[in-house]
Image (cartoon, rainbow, N blue to C red; front, side, top):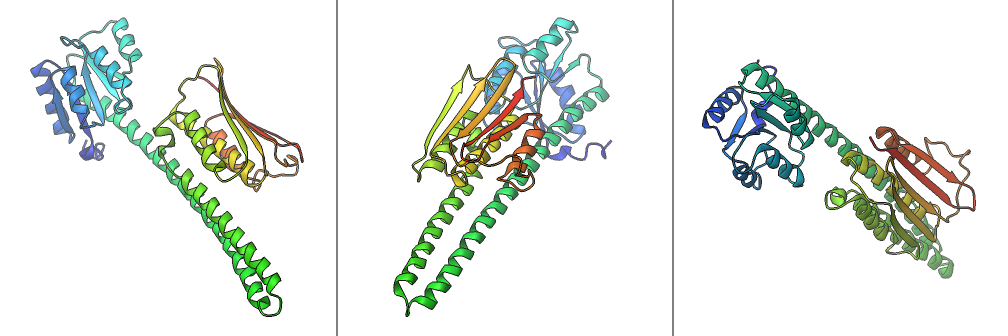
Length: 343
């Protein structure tokens, strides 16, 4: 048993039940299995506790006075701080209606009384294992993203400094014989330095993980667009079409990165003077569209493996089962369209 529960030493469980007997019984079962257990005899006290402590899992009784389990769960799920904590309902109620309601307000499992020790442990460990795997996946995606951005910063600065070294070398050789020509190379060095600094700033800015945590997809894209256009004359518009709704965080994160890559291409390579971003919220589908009036390119001659970050966009679209379409022609701008069906 201890081998199967080897991850539990760092995991905490909050039990919410107005019955002292149930609190004592469940606390004993879970503490003996190695979990750190917190007790709350009411929904109100539990909500207060969560303001300063975030458990890994909540066991929640349905039948409680004043604030029952359904209302408690709804408040937990409506709060950004606690909405991702898995909730297992515990109750003597065994009607299908009660179980359906428990799931409808945000529960992920249901344990009926009287409690069976083995069932409690299996259901608790199952949900905690899912939570661990989810966290590992998120951490892995964050690490991959930061590694990608680190490579991009390295490549950008390496290219910039190579150009600076070459032009400084030429200027040094010409400074005595042809000062004017040497001055031209020094001016190029200044331009390369400014350009490299701007690219590095944009890359570092995109590493910030709070873009979606502090707002929605529209706000994040609008922020990135303003940052990228701050030192240019490019005209940009970010518009929402339809009534906005929330998408899963993993979906929004990949949509944001695809949009960011499309914007980087529009600013850095396409030399665009006008960029329009549309977030289209349809009943059954979400569409992100980034369109620029830049120099465009021949889509048939650009390979996904080496062209303008297209491989990264394609991989991200695949992660979320989205459709990626890129329309472009030389001299006629580029349009990147990413669409995903709502489940």
